[in-house]
Length: 141
Image 1 (cartoon, helix red, strand yellow):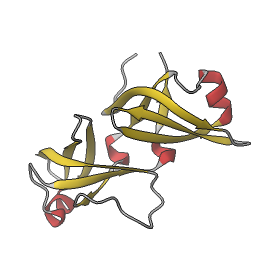
Image 2: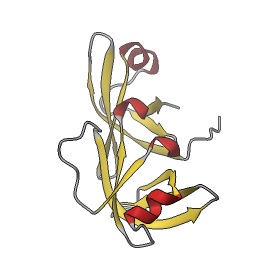
Image 3: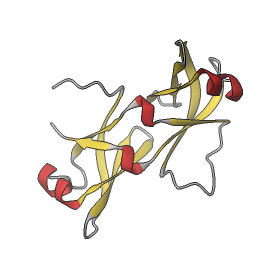
């Protein structure tokens, strides 16, 4: 199956923290860990367990960016991934920004042209991608 989500990160389940209704699944992708908040029923249905393979899926519209290289304290987004901007593709209203980590993980986000300008994003800019754990979909083969 092919899907339209721009971000599809294949990795290994690092941990599963079970809850009564929802669980947190941590997926190791290179040197980054992406956390997903999904139903405990989905964890069971997908057979997710430590050491297993999984794919973290995130729509570009669910990625928020901050300028700079430091993670942001005092924010609820569980996924904060630092890197450099490697491309900015401007559209009429929105731009696609691609951030790349030191080990090659690429994250695409769709943000307004106004945000690109106010953040000063250009190729080579330091940035942090922020993704809420509830915006991460988990898939398995």
